[in-house]
Image 1 (cartoon, one colour):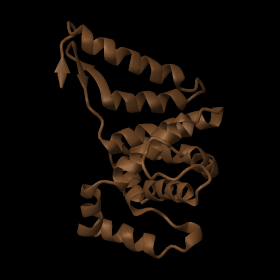
Image 2 (cartoon, one colour):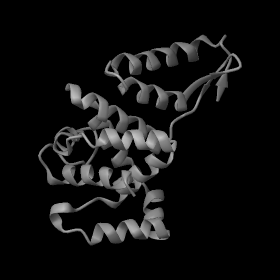
Image 3 (cartoon, rainbow, N blue to C red):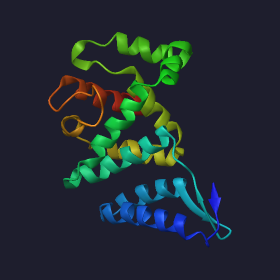
Image 4 (tube, helix red, strand yellow):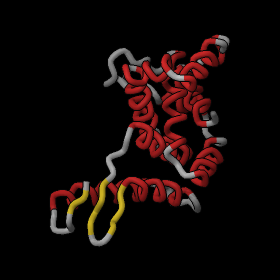
Length: 190
C-alpha cells in the first residue's frame, strides 16, 4: 500500500508510531541501530511516497524480539506481552497447525518438542514463530539479534509474558510461560 505525501491521514498515523519507536529505543550505542534498521524494513519513503509494509506476524515478532533485547535491560518490559500475543496467534492458528503437521520442517519441530523432558519442554508453534521471524531478517540483522539475545534473561521474559487479554493464556508464574520463552530462543537458532 502506498500513499502520496498529500495524504495527511496516513502521515498522521504513521509518523507518531515511528517517532514513538525511536523515542523509546534505548539511547545506547548500537541499540537504536537495530530497532531503526528493522523499522526501515516496515516503513520507508520511496520517490516521494510513503510505503507502508503491513507487518506479518513473523515480522512483528522480529521487531518485538529486538525491542525486548534492548528495552528489558533498562527495565521496560512491555514487549513481553506483545511477544505473548504473537505466540498466542501462532498457537491458535489452524494454518500454523497445518504447517506443523503437514510439512517436513514442522515435523522436525514437533519431534524435537516431543523428545524434550519436562524441564526443557518447548511449544512447537512458538518455535516455528521464532524461526519464521528470523527468516524475515537479513543475515546481518539475524546475527546482531542473536548476539543481543545472549544477554536476555529468560526468567525475566517468562515473568512478564503473561497477557490477561489472551483467552486461556498462562498467567504470571505458570510454567507454560517459561516453555514459550524457551521456545522463542530455540526457534531463533534453528
